[in-house]
Image 1 (cartoon, one colour):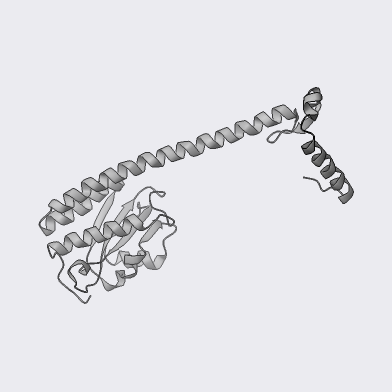
Image 2: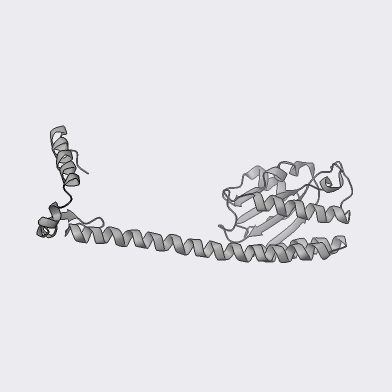
Length: 224
């Protein structure tokens, strides 16, 4: 927008105030609405005030439809995820051996989150920070130090474009201090796990997984 001098700006403000205080003006001079020409918001041509208003309303409707579609998409996906987590929890509760618990965790969560890989990594004291703050993000967002730490425990597939590494508070449910294990989820979809994802559900999954492992004492206390 080109700059205008203060005197013109003052005059335009007076006109605007007068129009606000005189709502019947355009009713008495309806033809004036068709004569007023404004620049098209997206094209290099002039349009009528009415056409400009219709263009703005059309743009607003398109934006509202886009947001509604996103809400419906994520709402449907969240409902599906919640149903999957309930089914996973039932499977976890029925598991009574280390093999069954680990299978329920890895296979079940791979299905819930629709990822290519879900793995349990052995306890390691270095995983401690990931209990309260899970490692989560695309391959581009993750720090090299975090990826290097994971690489000491598991082969990092170059096709993995996003990952979650959740620290499992092993021993907490039975009052034993132990080094945490890690649940690793990896996807070929870069947008599946992002740095701004909420960690609430991830921590709940970690606590449930750790409690299930504690129940069958899958991991002996270790100072590693």
